[in-house]
Each structure stands twice: as C-alpha cells, then as structure tokens.
Length: 181
Image (tube, rainbow, N blue to C red; front, side, top):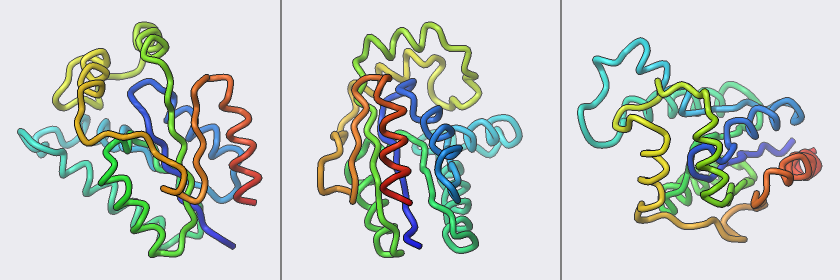
C-alpha cells in the first residue's frame, strides 16, 4: 500500500482543520496532525516553557515527535494540518516525505480575504493557540504581509487541489479518497 502525506496550505480560518477532520473520516487509515492542537496543549499546560521570542521551537519539536512516531509506528496516511505557506519549508517537508517513500498531496486553500474576515468575525474558536498574537484578525493581517510565501504549483506534489470556494470541499475530499484508494 502506498502511503500518502496530505499537506494543507492556507491562511487562518480558510478551513484547513475542518477539511482535515472531514477527510480523516472518509480516508481509511489516516491520521490528522494539527499544530494548533499542539499549540493549545502547550499554552494550557506548559506556558512557562514557551520561547519568549522567535519561532515556537517547542511546538515544532512536539509536532516532529508526533510525525516521526506516526511514520515509524503506523501505516497510516498523514494529514498535516497547518499553514505551510512558506515555500522553502513546505518543499523541504515534501522532500523529506518523498525520501521516506510517501506520495504527496497538497490542498491549497485560496479563499478570498473577505470570506476569511467573515469567518473570523463569526468564529468561536479558542485563542488559546496564540503566543504572539491576540486576535485572529491580527494573524490574518500578518499572513497577508508575510515574505517567502507562495502558492503551491503543479509539480510540487504528486497531486494538487485548490480550494477557491467552500463548495469545492466535498468534491476534493472525494477526489483525494479516489486517488489514495
């Protein structure tokens, strides 16, 4: 059986986590690994261990440990649910999984900012994941001005799906399940 890594790419509130959980329900032998879950865990139980500045190396170490365990100790497909907007980091991640024999799928959430702002305004999502922001609006504004961000392109992964409209989600999940099975 070929193993797949499915990587979500997109700004805050674009639907990455919801998509990942829905895909996991439909894709046999799959596991969602979501860095927001790790961030909330750290902020709830280990806040004193957070780096005061720079990247959240603690969160990345926990995620790496969980990914390594899933790769080595399971035969599951992995659904990596985080923004993955930095091209260099995304391509390094894909290269690592390709070296391990995984096939790859990128799901790029390319929704208009007005949809994201509406979702943020209506959100009841916990802000417990934050370390250096206080609102999701602030996160979105930061993401809009980030450097080293690029849209995934055909050829970056074995399969690329782009979500431009929330109505596309069910068909994309169906297409991924067909590609994997």
